[in-house]
Image: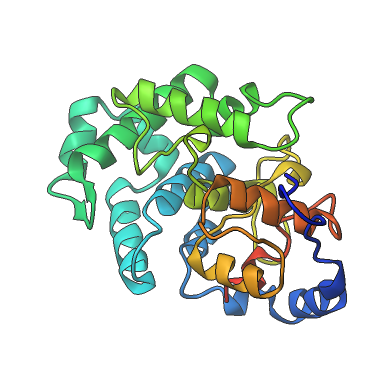
Length: 254
C-alpha cells in the first residue's frame, strides 16, 4: 500500500474536517439521487443483497439514468430472493426481455441473474458465498471479492467482465467495492446486513471524482483510478479510521 517514493499518504491533517462533514451530511436526506436508495426498500437481507448487487453493477453513467434503469430492473424481478430461487433460466431471460443499458446487454444481465440464482442455491445467500472467500490473514476484502466474482461468473455461464471485474486485473472495482460498502457497513446511510464482513477490510470505491478530491488533499500521488490507487487512498484513510476506512466515502462523493 505504500507509495514507491516519499512518505505514506495520510488523511490525518483532515481528520476534524472529515468528522464534521460526516456528522453534517451522512444522512438519508442527502442520498437521492443515488442507487443506494433502493436498498431501503428491502428489510430482508436476502432481498437486499441481490438488489444491492444489481444496483451496484448498473451504477455507471448519468445518475438519473442509473436510477431509472435500476428501478426498471428491480420492478421486473419483484422480490429478488423469491425471483432468483423460483425462476428457471428461461424465465429469467423472459423477464430480462429486451433490456439494454449503455454497454450492458440483455445477455449480460441474464448472466448476472443466473449467476446470482446458482450462487444462492449453492451457498444459501450471496453473503455466505462472499464470506467463503474471506480469510483472517487477508488485509482487505479483495481476495474474497475475486472469489465472489469468479463464482458468480462461472455459475451464470459467463466470465469476469466489465459488469463483474476482477481486482487482480488492476481494476479499482469501484461498483463492487461500493456494493461491499453498502452491505458491510451499518450507519445512518449504509444499511448493512453482512455482519461477517469486517468494515476494517473494505476498500474505498474509487472513481474519477473521488480520485480528484483525494489527489487535491494529497491522499494519493497516482494518476489513474485503478486498484493500486484505491489501495493507496484506503491506506490514507486507515490512518484515521483503521476500523472503518471507507467511512467518509459517501460524504466525499456528494
